[in-house]
Image (cartoon, rainbow, N blue to C red; front, side, top):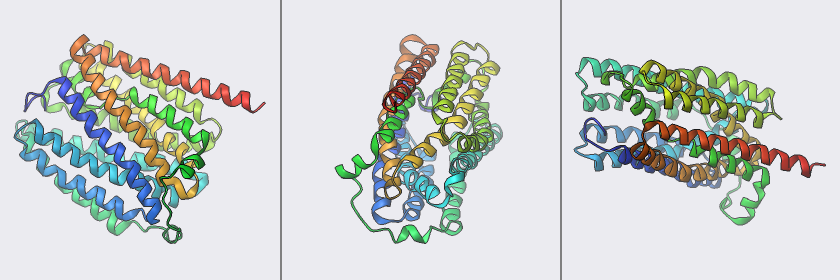
Amino acid sequence: MVIELGASATAVGIIEGVAEATALIVKVFSGALSDYLGRRKGLAVFGYALGALSKPLFAIAPGVGTVLAARLTDRLGKGIRGAPRDALVADIAPLQIRGAAFGLRQSLDTVGAFLGPLIAIGLMYLWANDFRSVFWVAVIPGVLSVAVLMFGVQEPEAHERTKRVNPIQRVNLVRLGPAYWGVVAVGTVFTLARFSEAFLVLRVQQTGLPLFSAPLVLVAMNVVYSVSAYPFGKLADRLSHGHARLLVWGLLVLIGADMVLAMGSHWAIALCGVALWGLHMGMTQGLLATMVAGIAPPDLVGTAFGVFNLAGGLAMLIASALAGWLWEKFGAAFTFYGGALFCGATIVLILLMRQGTSVRSR
């Protein structure tokens, strides 16, 4: 968008924010629909298929408008598949290893997220920064992901016999309970600190990284994310009553990442900040999914994931637009300083909620 089509940082923020928000908002409806139908897999397959179909749009895009359409299609697919897929993991995984299961899913998902950019780096180098040809190659793994899910995953029969009810009604939202809504509040404020990763790429490029190596930013982040997600998922299983403490540590790591990215003047230093960003993802993303799955009633798991991501979607839209505005108005460093402030606010919220819980239990 910036190099090929001349988009501004604000435009990047708005497009990324709208795209990510679309994915997260759609999850509430796909999650509820999966609860109503008692089936997860079909929605997940459809979502992955939309993601695969979006790749040719990037390759032929004549302007920012087409890129926006492609991003929305891709993120719409992500939104449709996200909550049913997470609910399917919760259906399949035994309770005692649910944290490890979510950590493993995050880890394996992230393996593709760094292998893809590695391939992109090689192709960008060989093809003289030809963005469009690289997007044509991206169609291949998109199609393969659909095939793996269709033929390699068996949906549990027990869930298919669940009675159909409308999950989005007041009585069911009340059934989710105060603890669940507390997790939603924490996740929402947390998302304000986690603007689009496009700003990580822009920041490292700004510090001198060659253009063809730009995907290295996502490689660095996702390698750390992939390596750390499963161990921290297992740790979450052992700390069943210490999830809030682990989440606070993840937020502190994100504050460290923001500080390094804000103050680093060389691309190697900035990449250290990106690595810390990946570590915080490994510490927190599977943990949040585990917390949601552990709190929600079994017949409302899809809805719970959907509503959780609806709140996060609205926060993501605000976060990315705000990040772009701060970048253009005050400079790149202030984008990351703003993220650190929202991390601090999330930590304060967690501590206040724990204090309130302790008072009520006396």
